[in-house]
Length: 108
Image (cartoon, rainbow, N blue to C red; front, side, top):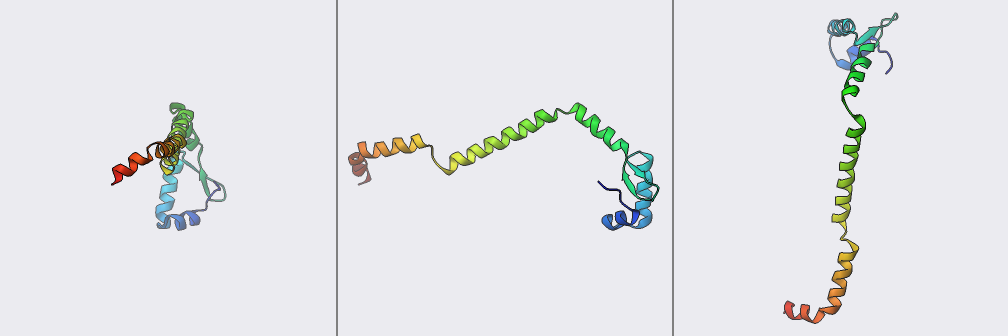
């Protein structure tokens, strides 16, 4: 993310300039943003510290695998509901030939 001027932040947040300035000052004290020499703001190093702490307690690979598994199950379910399995259709077709006369009698 590129550094943002105070004016850009005011416009993006639609808040008074004094409010945005106060918020930025508070965030800067917490290390969440840094004020650059030209007066613009960028994310502070504390943001990365928090991200690393979150990732350390989270198994991102396992979470991603769980999401991927669920998406795959949903996809397979949709595919199976959209068209019957071939063996089911083949069995039905063969039963039509074998039991055609019975089906006709039952249909009467």
